[in-house]
Image (cartoon, rainbow, N blue to C red; front, side, top):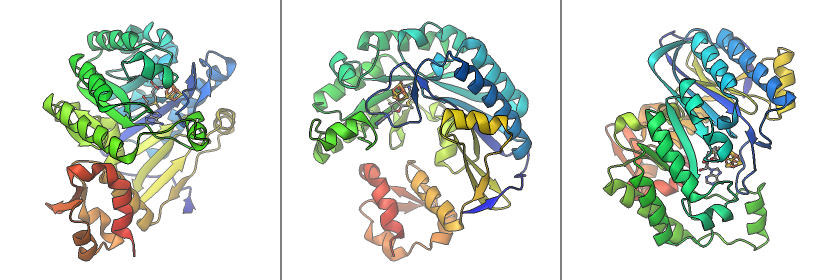
Length: 387
Ligand SMILES: C[S@@+](CC[C@H](N)C(=O)[O-])C[C@H]1O[C@@H](n2cnc3c(N)ncnc32)[C@H](O)[C@@H]1O
Ligand code: SF4
């Protein structure tokens, strides 16, 4: 990557998404490797982080220039722990910075714990129009194993309340935890469907090395389900949600109709532009045909200090090959796949595509994973570009 500090400039009507990272969580889940710290953020550091994030929004606006803001995603961590007035400020600064249409999607990730649920209505009043609830499971034994600080009943109540308060509601569920059977997974999916969200994200539990679960697995204390069982869960997800009218538009994401797709996440999967605010947040922009990438300092104190010192997170140019590889890896996640013209620089041969015909198909000048092979896309992307 080469460093480029020249501010990006692009057409003002080009879409832009804004990701805001709020890293605090009341409790750290043993499987999570996101950029998180324990605490509710109601501290001096939390206040300083809010000020830094507000300043960062203004700074990013002057670097990126005018754009059409199509989405704001408040992720974490647990942004449902943000004091409502802080949330209002972040949203109003963002929509004032860029040209935001009335149809802007404003999403927030919420935990169904007591502290978050207590101010769901304030969150809605602040302008959030899409709530993504981290349910994970409705079964108390699973929630205990996953180290969650809410019960299944509380999660179901939170979904019902969210449906009254927000125009759009999405649920996160996790499958393939140790000991889970297909019957258990089906029960969670059916409970979720009965609550009528418009969107469900169903993630396979990953065991990351730097987490308590990763360490327990390495020491033989936790045994993930084998590959066949995980594949069964994956297939069951598409079957049960498909019968209920949810389209598997992305590997882990299911929506009731096109309008219910996650607009913000589509920016990532479709190779569009977004800026990131908060510790460890990433950004991607196109400028003069070059893909630029940015990553803010991960440590909260370093991020706050960098913003206070006016040290701008640099935008670095990705090589055309790296940009196309990222486009391939992200785009294959979508049911529609990736336009081949976006991958031209990778010079993928017809022979390679033909060798993977059981897993990939080319239609309308796009390459896409076959439905039964979507769980394999990381491997498929590598195979496609292997020399
Ligand atoms: C960054 S978390 C934020 C949501 C919120 N803090 C919560 O946990 O409810 C977003 C989602 O990532 C998923 N997730 C986090 N770690 C995971 C892992 N190791 N494997 C699978 N899914 C994971 C969970 O479904 C979670 O709801
Ligand atoms: S899964 Fe959610 S609540 Fe748990 S530590 Fe990660 S971000 Fe925090």
